[in-house]
Image (cartoon, rainbow, N blue to C red; front, side, top):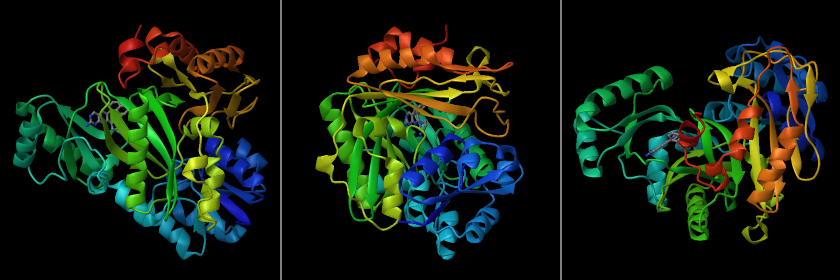
Length: 446
Ligand code: MV4
């Protein structure tokens, strides 16, 4: 196992990684920006190193400063968390060049799956269902031909995009030429790569993702999560397992393992699928990182995914076997964001004056905030996650309602997503599992 890990992230995930490291007996170095000098992971770490000013470009994305901090502190591994440098193949490569282990997938894994058109090709090769569509588009004519064969609506996606960025839905052939040109231009501006591809647009799908762990030789799945409850591609509530027939769940997880095995995937990864009303599932993209919503999987399987990332990176191999991974009960996570749901989820920064997290049976809190904490304005607005486990979905919902009723996150002008979550939990469509990617737009807009 490693002696000392550098945690190249902030907020709740920095603390989550720190906790796993402590339990494994690995010393911790937390790097931070000036704005995060009094954050909880910084206060709890064995060592903390300031790597730059508040702006992410100059701190959490500053590769020379992060690598210098790792070398100076004598870290033998770096955990990137999610976001920032987590899916940056070049950063992983540079880390290795300095004799430091990157706790995550190989740079090759990241490059192959980071390009979404390539990820589609790999899925097809592996025999995993993908949405009817194209490889990288060569011309407008090619797009027109493909769309007329597939049928409208279609969706244009940037190969270098992902997570909903750079997508465009097209409903008829008259609009396609302009949409292609605009999508290419947007992709060039946003990602420095104009390449786009086309897919059939799946209407009102469920968004279901499969958690996998691989060691380059073997892959296991840890079942799936439903992440349909999102707003503008920001997930708000996630649960495990999904509300799907057993055969569909079995199909999804075996497709995920097939794809991940096909490329010799290493570390924790998530394969995203769309599931339509008929229960057909289609692979859309793979995330080569630990995800925000990983705790719901940990709650139903009892596996510490971050600790497993450490063990795999340390060369201990995958110790889990598929037969021993059992899913029990139901878990739900809600994201507590410093945002005002009454004002279009506008970020609401401020100081936390009163903080009371829930507790009791089956409740887990992953949060880096404390009483007196000033929420910095430069980063995402996630201030914590409440995760509950119940014997079944009903119990998990009741427990989450109980937990949120105990929760107090208050301060001058501070608003959070807690009241919104309470309404979701009482929504009749949510309660009967009628959740699709349009749930919030369709069922929660008064
Ligand atoms: C789609 C789709 C419908 N059809 N692809 C959005 C996030 C990105 N990972 C892929 N996304 C979508 N891709 C086809 N062919 C609908 C979405 C989508 C969506 C997906 C998951 C969760 C929320 C979503 C909200 C709107 C659209």
